[in-house]
Image (cartoon, rainbow, N blue to C red):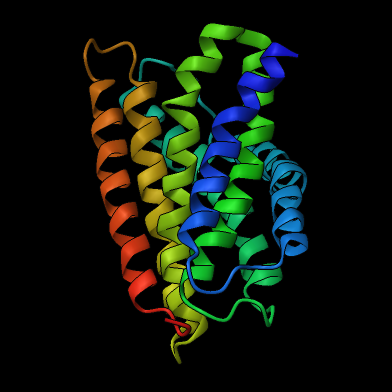
Length: 223
């Protein structure tokens, strides 16, 4: 029970934070719950299926190869995981009538991302224990939130743009780049001190996320 609470707490905290930041027109709780569950189940299953295919194409044979770790970080992990989240936001949440202001892109993308992070966190925390839960509460879970906010920022713009495909694609790619960068520095654990790059990228992601939230709050159709 303790591990379950520790795995859930950072996810719930971020969900509440984003929900409160949606100042002008709250989203239906049922739709938010479905987005979370799709992230927790469907995106995980999709990731597992696609990863199984991708790893056959991009085989990692040398854990000490910077080039192979780059491929692992950006393609095998980041690209696959962000795509699995993206398709839920794009084809489930974005077409909804309730998705009626730019900030909604952030709300739904974060809900899907937190669903994904919740399930992923369960696996890691139940395997690694309390110390893993604490570390992931201040690293991996916030990282998934920033990827979601960044993706959702552009997808919120896309909903009301005549260049929807461009902004949707931009959101997906930028989130993938941030995700890949974060993981890449962590995967280079055989090079002393390089892991600091992951925290630098996370810090930048948090700053951009705060700016994205403020921008869409100011641009609300209901302000």
